[in-house]
Length: 95
Image (cartoon, rainbow, N blue to C red; front, side):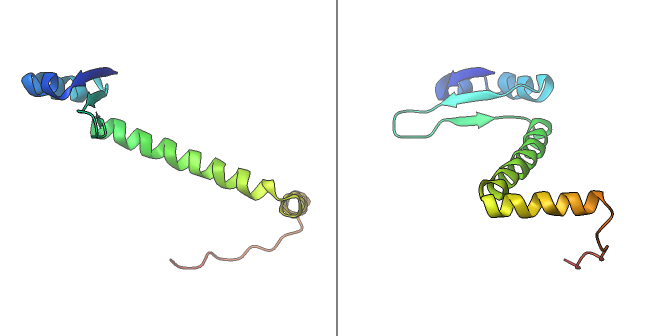
């Protein structure tokens, strides 16, 4: 990861864009006070981050579901029923 000022990025923009594209690295572009910094990354790196974010959101949902003692107990009972073969398969609803 490289951190640059907006001016430094602008002066050698092509070089920095090539670096991000070829090295699959990212650049943080610092902006003047009062403006958010910008992160520049390749589309390949962006796709990877999206997959990681999906995984993270799945874990967050699992944690949320297990936080309630009643829900936790219900989920554990359901898992045990499924493991013992006590379940009914149903088709998924169309989206």
